[in-house]
Image (cartoon, rainbow, N blue to C red; front, top):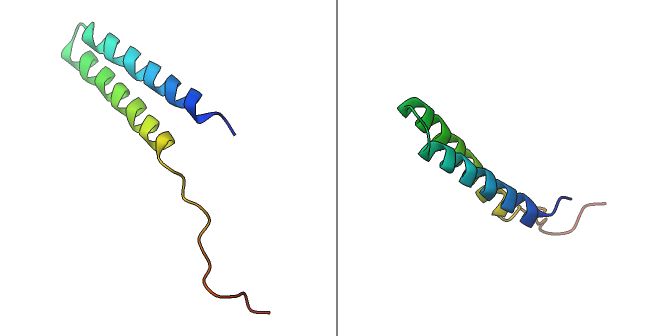
Length: 64
């Protein structure tokens, strides 16, 4: 399983890079596209950080 802290750091780095490029964009369309890229990386980072659901708890005993 990949180390989540490394994945989170990489997402943050890529989001920051997308924002830097958006700030330097020459056209409004280019800026908007790069801001969308930033948002995607930040959403993916949040997904990685979110606790993964555990196995569902079974009530009662299994039937023989």
